[in-house]
Image (cartoon, rainbow, N blue to C red):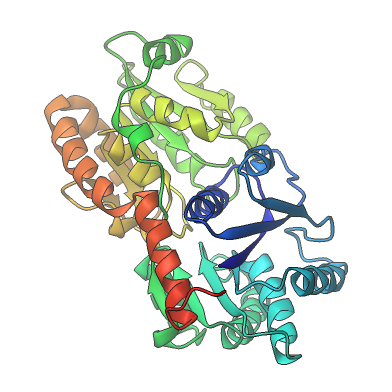
Length: 389
């Protein structure tokens, strides 16, 4: 098949890693793959270098930016021109901005008589949510409803995403399929070299308990809840680690010093994807206090490494975390967060049992080979189960 994927920017993030693994996997299966992306701007790091080494075509459109901008019509026009040249069998868009512009471009070409290209979209996280303004949410709901009418299929990375989209009137039930975001699970199953060195670099000894969150330092990621929990936990053995970067770094550093936590809360900066397995094996407990998420990749990544997870019960979290694999909390439950961390810190046996169960679940559900196979089968079904000539 001739397949084009469209995403806004290749920063270090879950949607971007998902997309690259999909492109790499489809190319390995013999398909012609093109990835169209905007420039990798921002402090979160970039995956564009990896994309360019993937053996498939990469097109960078400067007009395709994450923020809403008057230039967006130019991005849509440029996408339409590029898709007209490539004449793909499948156009597969990711996330909201690229999804709206990419689907519009593909749909207008199809209506204009350019073949029978199929249009697929993946929801990694919805752009409308309880923390957005009423006007902003209304605009995005209207745009997503129109884009859904232009789609042949919509992939959700969690069942929760499907329920939320349908409840907002976005698409029809028969359009949706859940395909969990895959990862290279073998990289996480074995303990990599450098774990002890990583811990020593944070000033930890063999008795220290490391509680880690891996995410962008951004709004709604919940770092302040972790800082408040750290302030309320007196056990000097328990250290906290934020892995990632973003626009909130300065604010978080200020709060760490205001709370007197400089010796116990550590900011490591960005970790490229190939170092994430080391980070997961170096921690004792993985926390994820985001208030808005599709299904955070860090949850199954930690589970694959045999670590217990503590997360707020938002969006798709409960599709990875259960009482067998970790602790789910109501969003914003600070007392519950402190109790969960303290309880796990006190019980190595509980950490091991939760970690072992989590590893079994994540190994069977989040393998990237399974993700790519299911996506390929979806394309073939849309094309009538016939590989194009």
